[in-house]
Amino acid sequence: METTEIILRENGTLTERVIRERDLSVGPAVLDALTESVTRPLRNVLSLADWGVVHANVGLDDTLWSVRLDRIPLHARFRLINNVLVPAFDSSSDLELPLVWHAPKEVRLALVVRTEPAAVGVRISGNWLFACDAADRGYRLPLPNLHDDCLVCTGDFNREHASGAACVSASVEQFRKSKWNADLMRTVEKSQQFFRFQPGDDSFTTLPIEATDWTTLCDKVSTSIMERVIL
Amino acid sequence: MRHAHTDETLSAPSLQPPNPAEKGSNMKNITVKYGVDSITKQVEDDFTFGDLQDSDAFKAALGFGDRTKALVDGIEQDRATVIPANATVRLETAANTKA
Image (cartoon, rainbow over all chains, first blue to last red; front, side):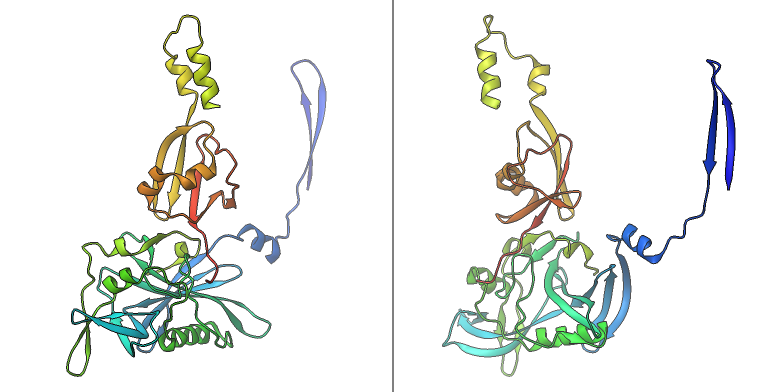
């Protein structure tokens, strides 16, 4: 549609103004470009047996799955110090045990799985382990096999699956069965204050963290991945 | 730049105290975010992203460590770049490589 206007200006000039209007066909590519950095949180997308619900944060190129953990499988070497069993990740002689550390409720844990489209199906492009406080601040736990940004050094496993759900299951299973070694280890003292067990007759009980404020044993983190975690 | 300004003030014939308005012009406000926490602080005019990343005062206030990257509007900034006045800087934990 075209509209022509004739304008008489204050100085006596006559001006012609032509206005042309047309509807634009906004295709998916344009919408995608405009919403490139927009992500959508979706709660309770999956339920994992033995673990619980999984939330998703969906972006244009990837999906971030947040698995809320109430425990960390700690398959590692342990040492008895003052009748308390603590990890000795860099040891080669101490007893190797598949213990499970149960998180106190003030330590909110999330295993994060990022998936991206693959040639066939979906591919896992990263796993992160975050600890969060009540105000949603993110922390790196005093554990080895964790990069500064909480990316988990998972070891090799099949990263391509038919669906996002299968990727999440595979990541959790890898997390469950992996052994913790001394790679990326910092100071073991903080680990030994954080992860403590009381040996019993036929079981090991998780002991409280040996610090008034558990975050003092961790490193505070801030990353674009952490921002998308849903707990 | 800071030293030049100081020298100029002290070398003035009357040795007058610095003009408060002039002194104020050598400072700027910046807002720094690290995770859910943020702080707005006055810093010197030539304060760079590297100065911020190394600042013990900002580290103590926000809890970041030695390895960070600084972003403005999602774009990573060079350490040597001077932070613009009233800028909001987002600091993120930088990833390390496997030992």
